[in-house]
Image (cartoon, rainbow, N blue to C red; front, side, top):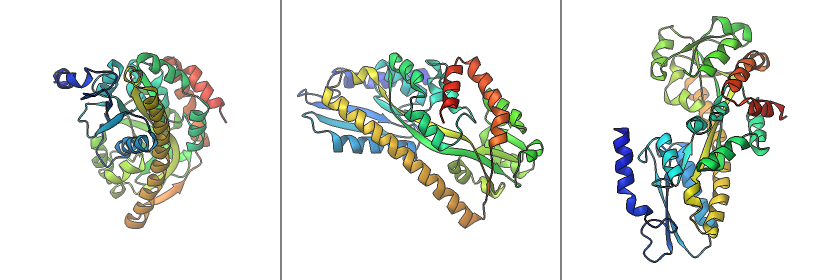
Length: 334
C-alpha cells in the first residue's frame, strides 16, 4: 500500500514537475509553485512553522516571479520518510518538517540528536546549533539532497509520575516507561530507573493500574493524553530537548532563480526561530494551565547526578553509530 501511494502520488504530480525551473502550471515562465507541510495536524506547531515560512517568504520576496506556496498537513503528502525521499528526488514535495531520526537511512549519525541527556538544557542546545555542532549531519544530508533551512523545537521532555520524585535515590523504585529505542532503555537504566519499553497508547492504563509509575514526555503529550489524571507530578528533569528540521529539497532549490533562493533561506531561518520561541512559550502555557485547572504539581529537580550516570551509555551509543565525534563536540560546548 505504501509503495502504491508513492507511485500514485508521483504519477499525479508528474505534470507539476515537467518544468523544474519554474514549477507547476508555469505557462508564462513566471510562476513557481512550491509544495510543503508536515505530517501532523493543522493546529500542531510543526505545521504552523510551515505557515510561518510561507508568510515570511511572501513578506521578504520582491522578485519578478509569481511564487505560490501550497501547504499540506495531517500526512496528506505522506510520512516524513516519504517526504525525505521525494525531496531527495526533487519531486512532489519541496519542503517539510522532519525529525533527525528519519534521516538515519542516509546519515547513520543523525539519531544522536534525539538521544536523552545529550544536551544539558535548552540554552546548551541553542549554543550547539549556533556553533555548528550538527554541521557534519547537515553536510551529509545536503550531499544526499536535503538542505536544512533551520532548526525548530526546543521543548523539553520531563518526568511524569504518579508520586513525587525529588532525588535520584527515588529512581530504583520507579517503574518508568521509556521509548523503544536502545539508547533510551540503556540511558534510563544507567540513571537508575526500572526502564520499561511499552507502546505509548498503553501507558495511561499501565499507570492507572499500577503496572508502571511514570513516563517521560513533553508537556503537549502530558495534556493531550490526559496523563495528569493518573500521574499528576511534573518533575523537571530536563533530560531531552526536541529538535525538528525545516528541510528543503536541494535538487529543487538549485532549479530556482537566485532571488527565490535568497528569500527561501531567510524565511527558513526566521520560521525556525519563530518555531523555537513559540514552542517554548506554549510549553510553559500548557503547564501553567494544568497546574491551574487540574492540580498538577511541578517539582524542581537537579539532574546533575542523573546525567552523570546516563551519559556513558549515551556515549557508547554514539560510538556504535559513528557519532562519537559529534557527541564529544557537543559536550565540549559550554
